[in-house]
Image (cartoon, rainbow, N blue to C red; front, side, top):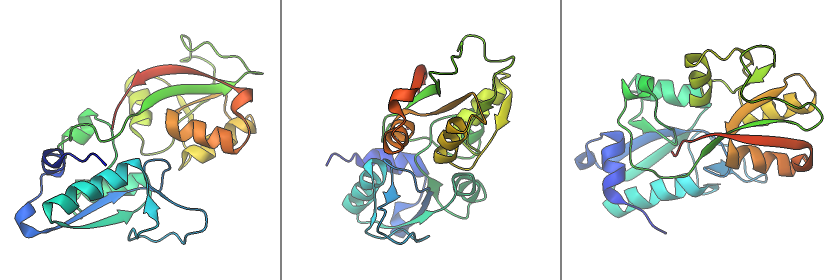
Length: 205
């Protein structure tokens, strides 16, 4: 596994000499999640795995730093970092508000923001500010980006899974989400063939 030590040091702006770091994240496959069989714990255990959490653990292990990972709702994970109750959070893409209280690392995982909508309910992604019911999950950088760019948000559930279900039930017309997360959920729900998507931007974590 490739893990870059200086990235993690720069990211969370912690005193490595203390040999103990607490980071917050959320339960989100494929970046970090519990298996279906595992009990969900707030303090991450060996069953909490994923492409981002494995790299973070690798880096701190190489540094000889004791790492504790808290698994929280995403909005709370960020608030804990902002209020200095934890040393940092992951995996989050950059925005100006996060820059006001945190220092971003180099990339630890890839991410693309995409629009998703039902093929049976076509959408014009160049004209979404008037009419379509847009969904974005609460606490996400995507939600803040929509607000900053004057997109009206009709529904803000807590998770991407809830966004997919809202789309399936036609309670929203379109949503914006992380491509890896959304497409994994769409595949699990056997909806991939029912949905169209369009790239918004590359936004690595």
